[in-house]
Length: 285
Image: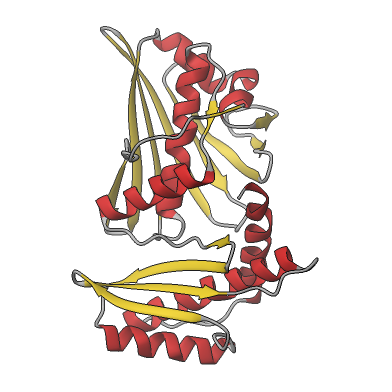
């Protein structure tokens, strides 16, 4: 795919809605094409490969599928399929988290309306997912129009992620690597002293933090935490960086649980999944 040109300040086209049991990420896109054409782009495996990834064996009601997105593989089951109208399937990501994706294709007087929704139980990777799905749906538009999809840069994606976080007041969760080392940010709705205490507690429990710089600041009623830690470099740098990011991701999760008064127990399985995820993501940075 071609690299897109530098963009102006990104504007979210989706919505993050808070629900009693979590969050809904929702998009609606009006397209100047017949609904039958939009359904074909949504379900034809050759078309899906252009905007999302290689799906095997395709979307088939009641059947499991595998989606190869290049740097990651997703699996799930098609729960509902009404030809020409709606598609629903589970989505199990590389971290082992499962959500349900709903697609609706509606005919309009001037074309079609494509509706997309996914329901999430937590805010983990939610703003990152919002930015990612916006890019995927823009690629969908390109394929529908017969254009080659453009690919956003990492900087464009991160700027869009931050725009979703600010507009919908949902903390970003995914860290990244820059020239100085790892960087990971999290927001909390709690007093600064309580946040500092929770972070000190989790860092002690997990045995991390000695080499890190942790900035904690009140930002208009929410507390913004930014963790930076250098990596030593050399041949082992990617593996080291993914391990440090995974450890801090888990620590910041734990701090949130402590602040909410919820029980938290370290999970070696979750830590390993986070390390693998960050290791594969580093190749796209």
